[in-house]
Image (cartoon, rainbow, N blue to C red; front, side, top):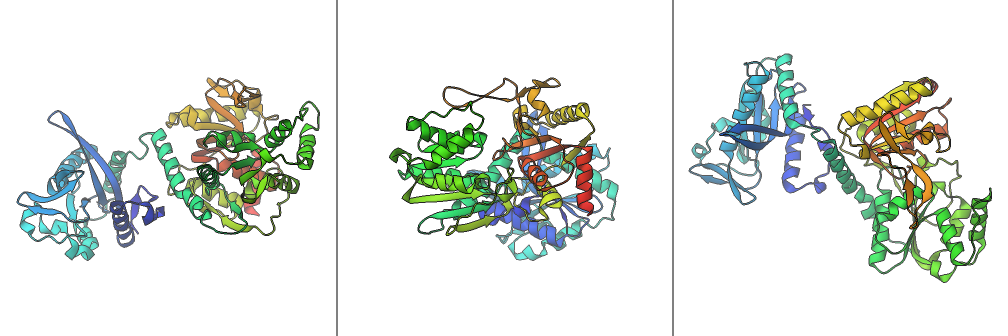
Length: 547
């Protein structure tokens, strides 16, 4: 099986692609399957050169490198083309393209780069026109040797033609040099910000499947429980349900345990309905009836929970749509209390993930509810999902993202000073890789009260951005003025960032809580993950893996 660069293409379903990209994916599947292991296929290879004082840019569909370093550039065109006296013409975006000329330009540009990179030596560089949907009628007008045109009539000969053109004896040094030139031309990570944006767009598109088919399930009364792993699209489902309810004139309520998640969700939905953490909800309902909770009392939260559960629900606090997120953090008493806010004909959604239960809550029973399970993580790169399955989940989580991601970085510390130094180096390295500071989150394995970082204003030269524990007049959380967000694994649950540096990881045994905290922290990263753990935590991991 040939090696394909970049990877991830096989994870995209044809329904998610344009027709042209679907055909390109089909060709990649053919090349990967039928070419030998010592062949490498690059796709989407970009090239540039300067001609007559101006830059000329082009794009090739495929570049196939043989074991001897020789390569074939493939221009693929699907659908109909026009045969003219000047050659085969394809109209793209209203402009005509001479395919033979495009190939010639690509060969000239890439040949110059290869000659420079190989110090004057250059492997054989061939060009091939692939027309899987069109049969050439006048071969003499193509502008290429007939051997180098594979049309619909010869479609089944593509692999044989490539192997015939790339029959030079194996030379691993030359092949590696050619592959390096092509990899440089690809510029796989030209801008981490752009890659992060693309990864997020891809995640939203893939995870949107849960939001689509979960809303297609019909039942009466509507009571749906979605057990979905991190990155499966539960938030996308909640957003879609909330917005759709508002559009239909229904009044929605979104409630969760985590205040940061509630604040984040509120920033994404239109005005209308209600968004709150569970204790925010208790407080708002009680205050609307004239009761003022006293948060100075040591058992204040227990008191407002009990008062909310026992009070009569005012008419203005009844809803047509109820969405409970982080359901694994709710108790049976909370379940009963919040369900009282749903109108008899209302629709209820309960979203949870047992792997994110950080408070040792007993699973809440929902008798009579329809259940839907999704173990597909579309958000985390495959490298991270692989690590999660190896360490924690025993292969239970499916990797649904086509993004491979970079290898997970693991740093070991022995004391407070080394932990801070390794954390500083990890953040600096991430910035050096191209991540902006607002794309990096420093995540503590500990709670906010016990974290070393809670008492720091800076990490080396980098000012930290902390939640101050205060809120403005509009109920928005206040943060310090730093530009690197520092959060805890508890508070950042339900959110994500392109780069996550998870520090202060320390445990003596890999018990259930340790596994879940590692799971939650690791699944926050959408591109890159760094784990900074103590020597005893690493030893506990190794003992568990060897047992």
